[in-house]
Image (tube, rainbow, N blue to C red; front, side):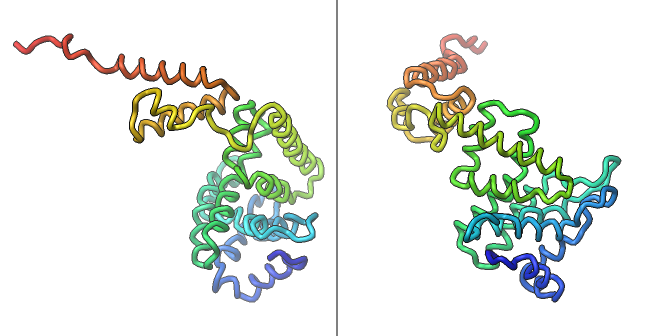
Length: 262
């Protein structure tokens, strides 16, 4: 899969019928993406993406090539025809599920399987960048991609196989801009390990709590503040805890204020 002749190899697997035996999702991709505009069928597009992915590296990464192979496997199951043409809504969600199932059956290591499935799940996310992203949206993208950020951006770049050079340049520029935004934010704050300024032990000590789901919910609240607003101080975090505790107390009725039973 990481060889230079991957395109004819994949085409040969389909034409010979061998893919039906161990990778039936591949020949199933021979469906039209958009018959009106005569785009490549999904199979031809997939093979082109696999061949293009990591093409500038001496040794393409297996994770990237596998993600390219599986990135559109959810399209046949989600294809719908409407007034605006063909749609494949949520094919990345269905595709990630199918990827996990097939790679598990092919006995790939669990960590490789999870990485590939996550890349499939996230591969449509950068396309929303054209709508304009806030700093918090960029932080979420970096958080969700985690250590796969470089692989995800490479997959998205490889996913452009249109012959329309103007559109191809627009998409490439969009990814360039996104990567520039990430670089700019990294220069201002820690992005690779987004976390609140205090940890769970500090939360429990301040609020007098034992380990529980409540502590997890509070940590999630603190993390959301970090993603939305950027870095903040420990003092601000403790103020949030005090506000949370006050809100909880306000929701608990005073037993002495109840109307006595008649």
